[in-house]
Image: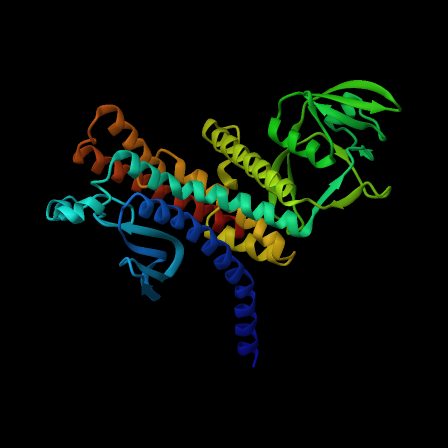
Length: 379
């Protein structure tokens, strides 16, 4: 009886993480590959396989164009295999191409123009960004946006804001010349500048006051106990005076919000990657499937809208990751196509083969590192 109860508990606990994780990952992978597929078909390139996941097929069907759509057993990614591809990474199958007739060559990926190949490859990451815009816009359209007035209710002791002279009751008007309409605008601006000084203008009892604050990086924990590092200035706002409210947005305003939020997250992600490369940020915040599953399960307890927002955030990350100029990734293919466009001919097969091997090694090391962070974070 005890063993049965323990097994049942582990199974239930696992489902809390697995189901939201698969939901989020499937949405992201499907739209990424759909971008490749749709633009490829628009460019006249024949798709042989559209797979969500890797490994043995669980279920699938073949459409009228001869594309096999399938759900595979290992749900950690996906791929579209075009005519003339040797594998899921779109490595050209030279022998197969040489043996094609004229009609097949007209619809093969390796024989398409460099512009059509580049458009097909770039469409995957672009689809990720479009997906995030749509999710952010849809969530805020149906649920509204929580906003609060940029009025300081408290200043944390020994904080950068306290050192700069902020006082409770100050209303933030602008930051570095950028208008601050809501407290969230203030938070976003601080998050974007990192540890660089910020020139604030505040309204203090009707009088304009200028204050300069240099944020500092602090490691904090969210409600689930996950630690993260972020720049802070030490200003707080509360809802004791009813300053926080739900703001309804129309379709166009929601779309603007979706674009703005996607751009903000993308710029922050690129900045983080740059700081990791230069050593200014710790790489221990990079996570893999285990951490994504854990966060997905935690966020799902908040609500479906929160889970969709997580999917949007991860979709942006996947889009940016795939644009890195690393062979095996979309960005690596685009780099090869750029060289081809400049040279007027493709790089040699030997150079491309070496590049793909280096890319495979880099991607493998990144995956191992991410898994290590996941595992060490659970100890």
